[in-house]
Image 1: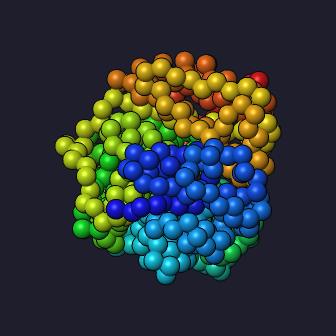
Image 2: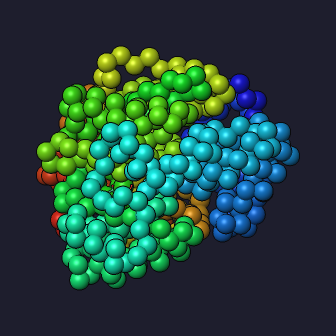
Length: 452
Ligand code: ADP
């Protein structure tokens, strides 16, 4: 086992990883930018190193600064969290070159799955269904239009290197295609330094259902059932739950088998998520794989009872998967709401600022993963996620009731947050009925319009 783990991240996930390390008896190192001096991850870690000025590219994305911090403090492993360098194969390689264990998959696995067009091809090759689309990346607008016509409009144009909802454009018809194609390529180039895009048929009412997987260095891969992340704004998740109201045991096994097959094929190591779209008649399609821990991992922890972050650390150290999970049966129901410092009435514009009052919800089955406190200033440089409220109930009805009371008693003052919108979604008849798809918020604008 490792002795000292450096956490190459900030915010709630840095605290989450520090907790896991402490439970495993490991020392921790925090790295921070000049904007994060007062952050709790710096306070809770055994050691800390300032790695640069506030912008991420000068600090949390700066590979040499992070490797140097690990070497100075004697860390023998690095946990990347999510975002920043978590899916950067060069970072995984830099760790290996310095004899530091990267807590995650190999650089080759990250590279393969990071190219969404290549991952799609691989899924297809091993018989995992994919949404109809282009055979690979495509750069010529006329050839792309011909393929779009063939698969039928609407189509979605996606960045091969994509993530975080960036570089994706929907074209409703042939007339708007050329412009959407160019915009997607420009956005992909700007966000990822790579203009490659590919096409998929744009499904009309899909649900987003993803499978949590975990693999060890002894060739064992298992899945930990699904999460439903259909409540999204601008193709980004707001609320996640497990199990999915749309998935029965038979479908769960089918989707789980497909995810495990894909991971076994590449000998996947560590925690990962295989994302699918599920259409109205129960057909599922591979979308992409994320080769890291996800923001929404706590819902899986609540319904399985496993600590995914501790397991990531154990398998990175060479231990065998410790889970024994019979019949893929989940316990109860869990829901997570992402609380962002954003103004929903202004198209979810980030609202950094100082927290003047803070009281987190509590009680049975309520978990809050957060790094904020009264007096903390949310800096403008990073993601606007300030807290995750996760509830667990004996069934979905109890989880919903718990989420209602949790959001009602969550006090965050000083910055505008998404709490009122989340609260209205939890009460929306479609969400209560468990029938929402990824277009839900575009069809229920009243949920957003009535903000504060
Ligand atoms: P990113 O990696 O940027 O998050 P994803 O490929 O995971 O992008 O897609 C994010 C979301 O975009 C999905 O959850 C879904 O809501 C929507 N989406 C992606 N592909 C399609 C598609 N072919 N049809 C309909 N919606 C899609």
